[in-house]
Image (tube, rainbow, N blue to C red; front, side):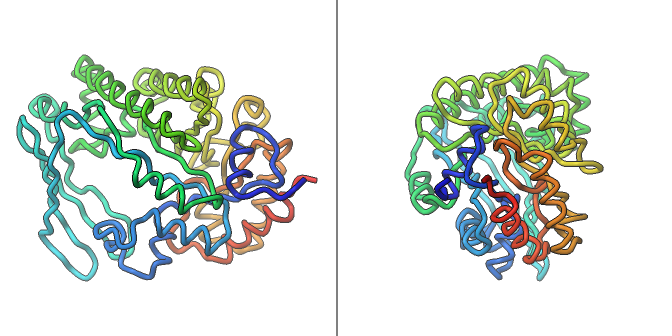
Length: 380
């Protein structure tokens, strides 16, 4: 078989077909690209110098991986544009703290963000303090877009070229996507779910309307794939709650994309087996990752391939700490060969990691992953 470009290789695997070799796409969407710049992390996340997406492209070039680009998409216009302010309040050698202000016609929402010198930022004070009291303000966060600008998306696609696949994220409602907005996080959402179910359902419906309109515009923009679901879909909420809050939107997005000929992928770190089964049997999804193994997740790659490999392509699942961070290149080689043996037969498999590679992952381990794909992962 003629050698494919990284983009061709990746797309073939997502379609559950057999490329020239197994694509190599370790999840390094944040920490490793930021570290490779040699700059304080707040340069990337606060000053956007360089923006994270451009740092990722440099990491793709550096390691020679098949790019999995998930940073872009249309810039949406909403009926009532909101004004966002971020003001620095404290700076030390280790961290910067900023206040966030979102101005809405119903009043302002306030939060706090902490930027670290060598780690990604954290929302340390959330915007929504009391959903009932803040409801009129919250509604403005979930407006349906009325137009979009593709300028940056097209520039990113041009710069990515054939180095990898270009994805646009359209998330799904649920605890896993809302917890970053609510003070009290999952505890607050859990109480609201049982004490104010009508309000939670109204939030879900409002969020779904926004997301489906976004999905419609994204599909029209023709990315290589839509990334949906969200981290911790059945870890930050139970499978039963995910079925109620998340699955309906996931079904609609994947159906819309399939009808338009756009591929879809779910990312959901943590426990995932029940979600894999749900996606395979009840949605039009094409591909799922990262299929983490215990104790971080609950997936066996061989079992998932055997049970669902005819309906879903798979992306995963080397252990990000035991193997990638603390292991040797020999450990990585053994784990990568096992993953290819477990899930590579017939194609439909992308060799990756079980979620985000740690900042201090040895470069030799990443290079070894690429080497295994280029040698052992080649389809004859």
